[in-house]
Length: 141
Image (cartoon, rainbow, N blue to C red; front, side, top):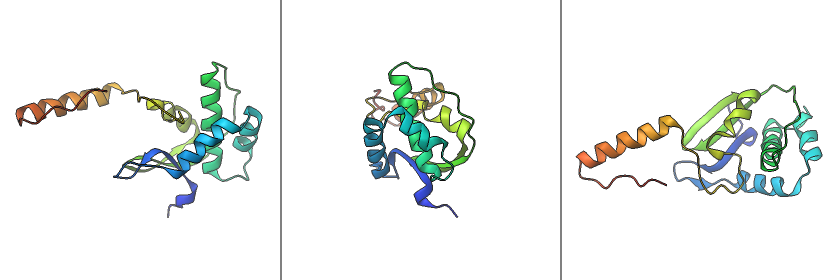
């Protein structure tokens, strides 16, 4: 059974797309923790996996924001994630490193989400159906 306390929640969660309390705390972590402190948490196997994952997200965000290269990490564990109304997904740490950059998910205060080609295709198809049904098309952001 999934332990909700060991799950990484991104900015919006659940069908109501509420702002995650965990993500609010993550935003504070990004602003207050140093690179060294974040790496200490990421590499500490005694820390909860979700905390290690949030620490990595903050570290990656800081590196990318300052256009610095990340230090190599030899870490592999599975982490549960909750993103929007998409249910829990278990990913390996190497996959998580890629996942957080998708749609700008690791930004503590995102102003936009990057849409991938598949999402663009789905929006166009949805708008085509809406037009056929006489419904206002979904607005582009």
